[in-house]
Amino acid sequence: MARLLPPSVHGWLRDGVTWLGRHRQAPAIEDWSRPLIATASGAAGPFQPFGAVTGPQVTGPPGPDNAAAAGGHDRTVLRCLVVTSRLDTGGLPEVAAFLARRLPAYGLTTAVLDVTPQPSASGRPTGQLGRMLLSNGIEVHETDEGSAPGWIERWRPDVISGHGALPKCVLATAHRARVPYVDTLHGMHDLFRADWQAEAARSSKLSVIVSVSELVRDQYLAGNRHFPPDRIVTIPNGVDDERRSGGDRAAARDWLGLTDEYLFVSLARNCLQKNTYGLVAAFGELARRRPEAHLVIAGRVDDVRYYRQVLRLRESLPCRERVHLRGHLAAPAALLAAADGFVLDSFFEGWALASMEALFAGIPVVLSDVGGAREQIGHDPARGYLVTNPLGDPLSADWESIAAIRYRPQANQDEFTTAMERLVAGREDYLRDRSRLAAESAARFSARRCLAQHAAVLRAAATGADLPGNGARAGAAGSVA
Image (tube, rainbow, N blue to C red; front, top):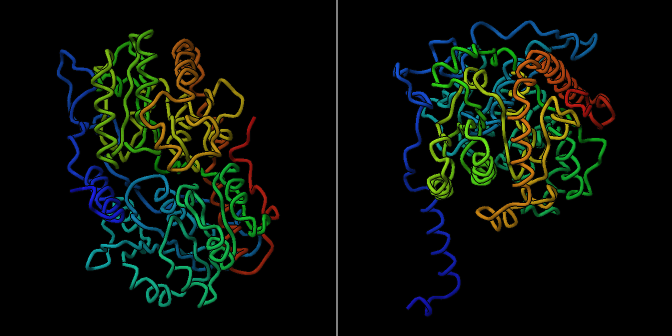
């Protein structure tokens, strides 16, 4: 009977089965109500006992940034509308929220428009980050695609800072109203299957593109050869130091039930991009040689079918009791304090916030070669190790190439395992160096420098001034040293 169906119906059925597999109810992921390792004392409870908060809260108004650093002697206040979608959790919305909350100290009055298919009836934000911004006095409005143009026109921005794959109406409204639009390129995943002619037409309406890493900038220019290179500026992300305070290592490890165990942490969603399966496979090889090693992956489940495969892999490993799959942590300071090493084996990134925040906490990292990883680690083993991309060549990343190897032995597995082994072997040296690495990372990933660079680009776009750095790399926050 199935052979009698036309190809289009076969395709529809296949897509339907795939959608159901990804979105059916996921197996329950463990929360943080109990320790990683059971202890005789029966320690339990959330991370509050040693100072971490349970959500993205900030006490008090935005910090006293130096506004003069952004605009020189020009202190004219401009209206900047930050536009994004799903202002809840994840690296991209974290950056959008960071800019919205702290750019006012640099002469830019901000508001956030969260364009989502199912906004709240009142327009009040429903996501964690949106609620945090609102509590800090930033205007945030949830709306759908149909209402977004009217809201933009009523707010009358001087410049728009766009983040993520947004509806065409947002750029069209800005273009019609002659409002400069600065597009922030957080990665290439939305352009893996791009119609580059269509992208060239879209980008002709942009004032500037801000890329979060040099690799992403190069990838974009290789695809969109019509876009002027002097209008794409690289600004590495900075750590929002007002929201990423340190934790108490001894208390955190005690709560988690850790004594002498070596703890690898990965703050990552369970999805194909983050290559959770490949990371667990690499750790499985390490665990054969290092019985003291544990791995905790903290993040929400984005792809149910993929997560089921990760669970099957874990259950097949002799070290399954040492692979901990836990839910998302909005405030990971305590977990990072307990960590000995940080790992991320992604197929692609723009500029991973989680690994940058690990370095900021003084933790050495092992990263696959993705956007921003070269800048974060450089050639300094004191920071950790950069290993080959799971595909071999990071420039070959697209959904087809990733899907082909997602559950197979990957090109970097042995190298990734060896790098983790080096962190374990050098544990005492890394612990002694923790304060120095944290101080160096605080300087390299300066929030103030990142904010000043964004403010300068937005101000230049709004006023028609020359871009800082002539469209090249805007700063040295992620310099390779």
